[in-house]
Length: 87
Image 1 (cartoon, rainbow, N blue to C red):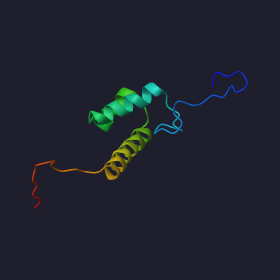
Image 2: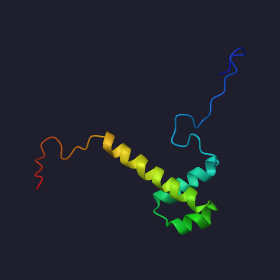
Image 3: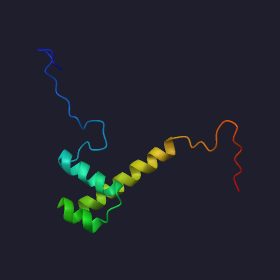
């Protein structure tokens, strides 16, 4: 907040997937980028110099994030004027 009386500061990570993570922003994004590109865990370990527990924990978090997002969104098959047959 820019008001002189307020002087409140907020974390850019608050209310995000990365809240509470002690890694830097660049390291978080590097882990996410490597996961999205389906890099193997050994490759990620070598590139990021993170510990194996950290890499595994991030893989689990990313999978959970994607699974939660897929569960919450409606899956529409077909569209207007399109007949869909599900076997």
